[in-house]
Image (tube, rainbow, N blue to C red; front, side, top):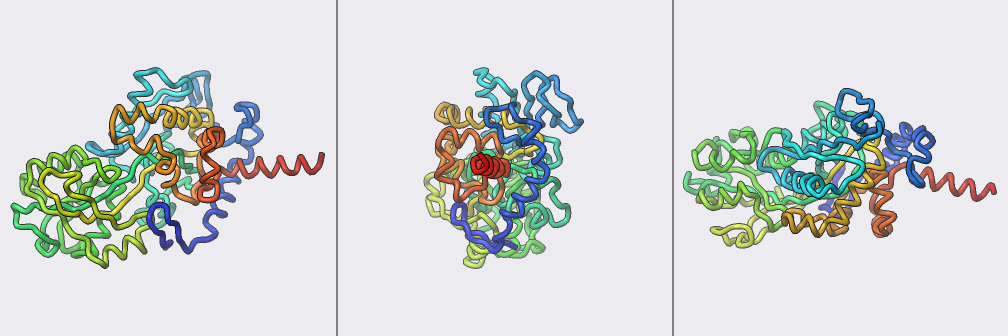
Length: 399
């Protein structure tokens, strides 16, 4: 399994993975370079999907062409009470209410969780969705994908990062829980069943006490506060978005439950550094997120991003989506502070996976805006960009 450092520090033992992805992605996209020529100025030719209101759909929500109308995007987020839904719905509502998009309409929907959303995008059942760099790292057949491989991984494209999680454990002190030993045989709310936090939280619980020595519970995040108050669980994992913004349901825990933070042992910290890709151990200032706990809180990070299949969402649509997400970023932050990633390229580009190609539409916009040059050595361009550059060189040499 690849060993990765935290978000921006990239170390690993898969030196050929980027080359593999470029080769496999290029196989299915070569024809697109020619068939889409002229659709966009200097089109990279990646992806002709994302059918509009008149497009020829494929029965999976993807569509098969422009069809003369805007592409109807259903943005898969995560479960009820999640920050992914908060981010997605803020963006979708702002774009829709202000009639900003010409090439698409967009609606954010609740899903079973970020991991489930990612699979729905890969399956072709969603045009756009959230995932984590850690899930990308484990694709297509490691970690949570060992039993059921992720399909169509060679078509997955990154668009932009949208937030980071600082995840931490809370224990119900009123139930006599102060540490991991007190949780022997007790119920713990791990996450929602399809959440991107599920696999790393399970790994941490397993390291601290043994997953078989507790009773894991999976539920909608919004249901966790009442479960803690009612004694249906004695501990849970929650998060602060971007390290400083407490999630609404955690604020409910903070105001209604006498809780104590669960520590992360040195062995767990080592696992975060060496085993769980794109996660790192951090500490949160308790007073920054809680009214009742002022001590430092042990936590681990996860970074989240929007992704789409190259053959399902067109370059034109992703170009406009990317443009709106950056040019309207300050206005989005005014709508909700959880949108803090949106104005800062260091956040929305600097936290992406280095080996997974960027969608051609996003790549086109980042190049035009002058953002790509700073990340060209650390991120992967769409395969058509390299092919176009090669063709341009050959044409110059032959003329």
